[in-house]
Amino acid sequence: MKIGKIRVKKFFWKTLKAILWCYWIFFIICFVNGMILRNYFYPFKYKKEVIFYSEYYDLDPALVLSIINAESGFDSAAESSAGAIGLMQITPKTANYIAERTGAVNYDLTAPDTNIDFGCYYIKYLLNKFENVSTAIAAYNAGEGNVSLWLEDKSCSEDGTTLIRIPFNETKAYVKKIEESFIKYKKLYPLILDKY
Image (tube, rainbow, N blue to C red):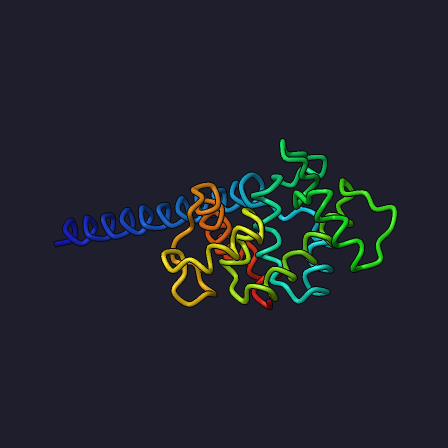
């Protein structure tokens, strides 16, 4: 009888230890995974500028972070083959348009503060024009002229506001990437981003 009880107790304690070890391993994997995602795939650099200009232009910082991540990977010196510059890949033509409306002079698109300011201004402009986040994101990538034409095409938009089909594969992939990144940023930085 005693031997049976001892075996049951030993089995119970071994099982309990195994369960606790599994929980610890699971916790460590989740913690390390979160650190890797935050540091390498979804970083939150230029926090002060992103928060400031997101609030100034009434944008969700997770959207701004997602666009910076997709456009430049947080490289302030990034330049595209099309001549787009900086964190949010602003073209000189778009920068001139924004500068005329905001009164900015002698601006430097490689400066994070200026680039994020101009990028947020442009996102807000596109959101006001297209009244749909996914459509505005498509316009950020493909240009507002292309998106305006798509919205007039019944095979691309049934209501003239929402795109049901994006003709450019690059833009289609871009919109999907931004939407997925937005969700990741919200999940990885809840204490900062959940209030927006």
